[in-house]
Length: 584
Image (tube, helix red, strand yellow):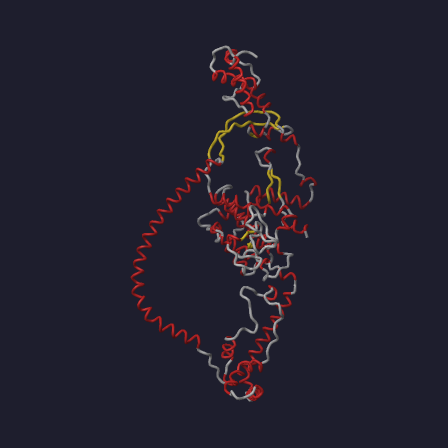
């Protein structure tokens, strides 16, 4: 079972080497990520899958490569590039505050306009209401009495030989149905609402007897039960076949319904019937459509506005189409449903620029879908829970231990991080004294999470960052100047040279050698924190021991510049050395 769970929740990842970037920047990507990239990336991915299926290359799945590919051989050039970077946390916080302030001002302006319109409408409605109020009061008492009389008016039943099939159906409709149904369930035996087999159908005479026994009893108050039964029998035998036909028709309908109930009961015994994956898919779709971010995915993309959409997207899809397909039973398996839902997010990522606001919305919706699809559909494949069991319906907003009968307040409910199931802390076994901090898993998910570490990626916590990014939308980027070095990598030709930062190269010696050969001196010293502290402490020592009257700050600057010359293999100028203090 553990192997099956792990296999069901396993998703392959592929190691990517980007064109124009070195082996230092390899990344693992899922199939969905690759499908959402441009056409060139999609073509390479599908070509890789074909080679994998053909099995022509044995080392195709080997992620190892020559370590020398990440070792810099020499520096060829040094330039200053302008790059776009995200704001720092402090800058982002400032930007969010300014944005929130602007949004509040807009909301206040819109609110004032709406209040003025509402006041005008209210004054007009109030006049109309006052005029109609008196009329309603006058008619209210009379109508209420009339409605009450209508509700309590007993149904008039004629003689047994005068009733039509419509009359019998109306009479039977006043009583509880002989074969009751459960709203929302097409098989109450399978779902566990009915635990007893269906009642056998009644013959036509018993239907007739059930209707008229009480009536004949009222007509003959002094008659015993056996005498009333005798009267019923004589009356029935005195009726013609045409007069008995409506009762026979009702009995036939009950017999037909009995056969259907027997078929439902037989189907309910099959273990495969208990899963109901498409019914669960409908709950997943309801959750997705209720998310505020789903509004842009509810209807097809307007191709009259986005003229090039069909040129980039092969198979358009939206949540409204998925719901229609689900209602029309076009999906035979949950995998077909999931395939269409994934198309929605992938199409959005393909058409829109990576990192844009709508791209992040699709990324968040995709993460949410994968989690609840696994938790609400795939995880129940082998659990064999009847629908009547509250744990079988983790999406319902009430305690899943007692199906909401405990009426636990919201502040005493705890939410599962994997399946979103709600539990009252006093209903759990053992009971919880308080709401736990951090991630919590329900009794159904906890054992699985403990055994299978892959479930950690299907967590609501991992969606928070994606949702936050979707809420922020387009975050302004800032342009900064970055010193870049053109690197020739060992064991790779010159066609594989790439521009890298000093941090990525991580080898100051080859940078110093390049600068020495090229006669390049940096405008400012590039010191680490440790080197800077050492230079300052050395400068303080020299300032205390020196007999000259050179100012401390002058010596400190001279020593810093001298260290810079030494670091890059150049001779220290004589005048600069004199400013540094005595030779030690």
